[in-house]
Image (cartoon, rainbow, N blue to C red; front, side, top):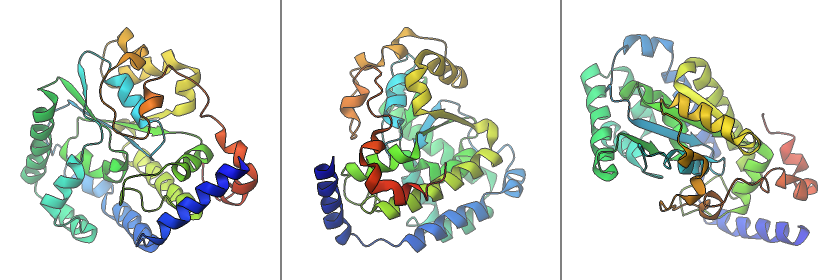
Length: 292
């Protein structure tokens, strides 16, 4: 473990030097989201958006169990698993201009209900194209946690599944894995990973307080230790009947294009729980700063 952590740190340092990343901009983005999506906004846009209830958004931090949850849900006969599609980020770019968050947030306040409905319809059309018109579909882009407020406006009857786990294991797993360029710019410095995790933690608390009935929170460790109970609760929230296929998710042959490929094809196991303890002496100073 000593030797492996030395190599993890060295590899991450090399990657971090190649990335232009500003944590202050991240903090600004999170604050602007909270400043924009408030109770007044939802009062203004009551009954807006597209009424289609087929989308299920699975989101959270990377390495939090999102792939496992999609593997379970997409094993249900009625559900198509779309994986990490970029539909929401692409719709933001298309309708709010080059992903300029300040512009996006300012314009949302002045949107009319028909436009929000149209954006929701665009999402449904794109998903229907790839899902062979499946009755229900899952969108497993973890960073959609930034867009929970917008999703509520454009697809108010969709479902949000928020996956979370022990933050110490979550942050270590991000540090240990290499992600495609530009996907997770905060993931190469442990201090930045912890700071970003805390921003995410605060934002998810904000969404849960603002939109409590819209979000189902599922903890990875609970799913591992109480699998059948958690799957039943998950299916109930998604308005799906019980299916034994969901319990036998490891037999699902759907392609998986994330770092969780092997894990999601295995039966439930607990090996990933408390892995951080193997590196405790290196992580104590960071873990002390983690919110949970």
